[in-house]
Length: 419
Ligand code: CTP
Image (cartoon, rainbow, N blue to C red; front, side, top):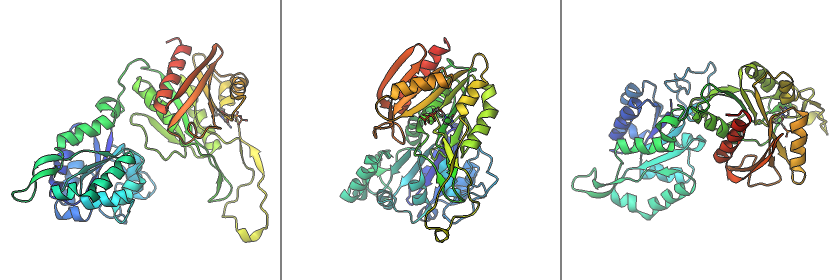
């Protein structure tokens, strides 16, 4: 079920946001609403709460009884920072109506209210639907602010033209009709079917795919760790692509701050040891393992329980011990019919040879090699360029979005499985 976080700012058009909530919940979306203080003068929290079936937040210090969960989720057992948990759970954040003031604040990264905090913390698509008087909308300041937002990748739903709120006024600035708001949000969510986490194809129906992603963090003390800059994007692109093909997908995520693709099972594992534990539990029941996580090869041998004080020593020596090679250990326990894919982050010349070495040593069906000496691809980048190595040969996938690279990797897996 796609989760839409709706931000409502002050303006007469706030009443149309109620209609949007009615349409969106009716179409099967889970909604939560955050309001600015100004919007409360137009529409009260009670109306949104009744339509969404969830509490409405309007203050960043307010207690959220749902603890950041959407109506389709169980609230977590711990007490998270609710608005951060809200944006983390959202698949899309729509601000409608977005007043001139809210747009200006968003363009300048201001976080003096709950809505601004949510917008800065959101890693899901941010959509802004302006609504205001035509002179305010056409003012160069508003237009420059909207241009800034667009440049940053914010999707702007253009306002309609027609009769405006003040008597006798006509022009551009009317909030887009709720049905258009919903249509544009659904397009951004990837169409109602895949956006809903529902498979759009049957090709991989019944295939259980286990994907690890992100980067492990190995504690030095209670606040510091040895880690890496893997964002988890490649693994999430694989999860989305496998889900769209009809697979049953489980993701084991190491410190991934991106929003969770709908329709996949999700487990968090912060350290290599936790990743190993989760993999051991999930691996026996999977058909395909895509081990995209950057797992630490070493961890501090004796992490401190407290916080290491600078004053206690002049020089700090950190002793590291090896972690288990999870993929190798899983490969040793593989059952017939399981397909195992490793990912090799290699630096510059010799990358393919190192990858081939890993294919053999780790007894894998395929290794996806990427060259981490390049800053435009791979770790923490939007794009990737890889070479897929199998016993039968190699296939170079030129620089493309991680979504497109994910499709090539799944094609290779399908080929290996003879499907
Ligand atoms: N991997 C793993 N457990 C580890 C380290 C790596 O399961 N402790 C997995 C990774 O998820 C990846 C593959 O092994 O799929 C290759 O990881 P990589 O770090 O490139 O290779 P290493 O075998 O660790 O070798 P090196 O770092 O020396 O290149």
